[in-house]
Amino acid sequence: MKHFLSICLLLSSLFTNEIFASSVEPLSDVPEFEEPYIEIGYKSVVEALKECETHNKRELKLPIKLPSIEFTHHLGRCVNDKDNDNDQLQIEYLHKAKGKNHYNIDVRPIEQKVDFGKSRVGRGKYKLKDGSDALYFTTKSPKTRGGFNILVFEKSGWQYCLSVDSRLGSQLTADLLIEIAESIK
Image (cartoon, rainbow, N blue to C red):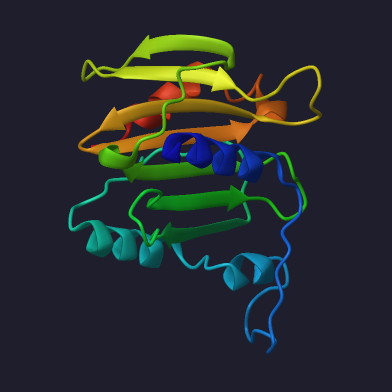
């Protein structure tokens, strides 16, 4: 049941186009585009990474390579679930004027991994250079306007989920996501 809830939360975040947040006091020195993210706990990627490493008491390595598209913002947050069922580092790479330029890195402790192996569109299995398996799938379907192309793999005690807006499918292929995954050293 915990995994079903995690999958539902992940999928709802993938299909949500708007972020609703409110604040009693306006944030100062924060660009307007970033305000909704800051209000729900996003901060610099470095701060979020350190927070997750401290919370999980272990090192978390990120891919060195990024997709070859333009981003204007990159933010991260460390989600510390009180029941330790849904802890994760969430990183968003966004472009203020180009909504399709959207790339996510979600990393969770392997003990809290999500099973993505069931009922996905366009599934493919790949083998990374270190011998680990990777699953590639899309959330885009004929019934939805948008979606994400996703690569999921495990490395060093973490489950990684790399996702790109499906509208970039011809630019950001499974092979490119695998190259990004391989850049984790």
